[in-house]
Image (tube, rainbow, N blue to C red; front, side, top):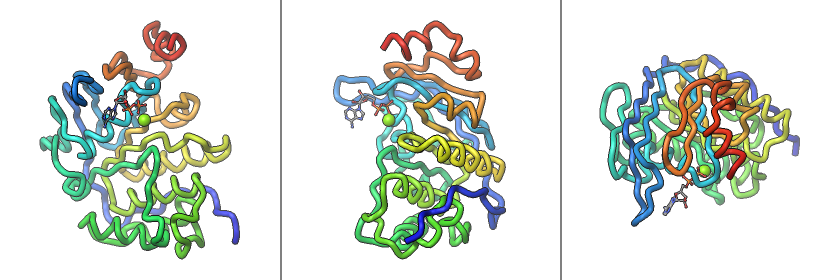
Amino acid sequence: MSAPEGLRPAGTPATAPAAGGLVIEGLVRRFKGFTALDGVDLELPAGAIVGLVGPNGSGKTTLINVVSGVYAPSGGSVRLDGQEVGGLAPHRLVRLGLNRTFQVPKPFASLTVRENLAVAVGHSGRGAPLRPDILGEVGLEGLGGRLAGTLNASQQKRLDLARALATNPSVLLVDELGAGLATDELGELAHYLRTLADGGITLLVVEHLLGFLEQLTDTVVVLSAGRRIFAGSLRAAIADPEVVLVFLGG
Ligand code: ADP
Ligand code: MG
């Protein structure tokens, strides 16, 4: 079996993506007595890449889970292209053009890579195949017939990205896709994500690795204990005393 190729620039999408502007205001999510998101504002202009950073447990994945419909918001609003979408089920959001990747991907292990993509496309209701070379794009060339359960961790992350892209999203929320990747893979991933944005996909990139984010965007939002403590340029973030404190002070 040959090793997968690196991530390659995306081809021209078969159809022009929808606009994809996302505005989150005062987002709250409580779990019993615990407040995981405490009134978070975040604006994702159509076509932009915005980084979402913060220490472990600061609420990054919870924000993705709420915005993608896994959890209902306890308060606040989420608007996609001006339409309130807070609390909609994941499949409804996918149909409206919003999808996400998972920090820990869970493919259907006993289905092949290609079958996993077919399931995603079938659920999306957004038509297919919109990206005919999606496996090549994400570096899974030649692995379409492999059982997903036999892929290594990096390949499962690539499949998860392909799964989300196969639904032709206009907004994609990416959860720590770079974690565990080697330096050269991170460079390829950053380049690939930029080609997606250039192709019209709006990206929220949750990432621990600031060096990786630096290759993608200068616009970041910083969370700490469920609150937004900073929004602005990455350069200003790393000079901000409160941001430095939550990253270094623990
Ligand atoms: P991050 O992705 O920034 O590391 P998370 O969003 O995963 O953080 O978690 C934020 C906080 O919310 C953590 O304290 C976590 O334990 C809590 N949390 C997340 N999901 C749940 C859940 N389903 N039930 C209870 N607590 C949760
Ligand atoms: Mg997380």
